[in-house]
Length: 272
Image (tube, rainbow, N blue to C red; front, top):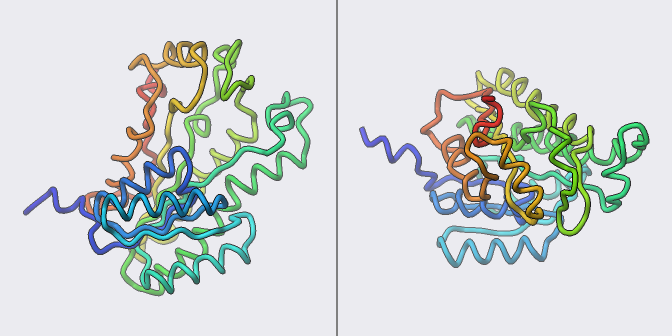
């Protein structure tokens, strides 16, 4: 048996939401590098088109961008119809998109002052969107009768609480930051949804798993990186490309007996 071949995604078609983002673009390139054709879904269609073009030029696979407002079921259905007409069959869904509010003051507000409107907005972006994508892509996978793999991106703060001490003097893209409760709650919901769907679709050969990244370097100031790194057994934040191997594993036949699992890529934080 050639065990390495089990990691190949040649002949597979993948959808990745948030595929033009900081992590998403790496995830999309990883899937393409393993041989998959990729549908790059993002609300930022210009960036998605550039990502799709870069992937096609570098890896030679079919790669196309699709606009979608993932909080709208109508937009999700329309996008999936377009993807299916382009790629025919769907084998892999990476439910990866997440977002922060355009009103950062409201997003980072103290819990005691947090607005219900802001809570609902982030829950819709981070969790409702995954429900909609899993619902409609999972239905197609079930109808195809060939199984499939759904991978959902959560966060380390969906499984453990943040250490608020690391945020003193910490900035991200020149703005003071914290981890709002809605972020933890929505990402914890992703893990729970994964476990439910894994058992629900197991009989149909559709596997559902979660990737949980720890803190990834993406523009934080030196103070934050040092304080976060001091909380990590490996002593540093992650690099975006260090998330990709787990995705390829879960998307491929190398993980054919793995479902309902949450792979924490956190440098050992959760092992303390």
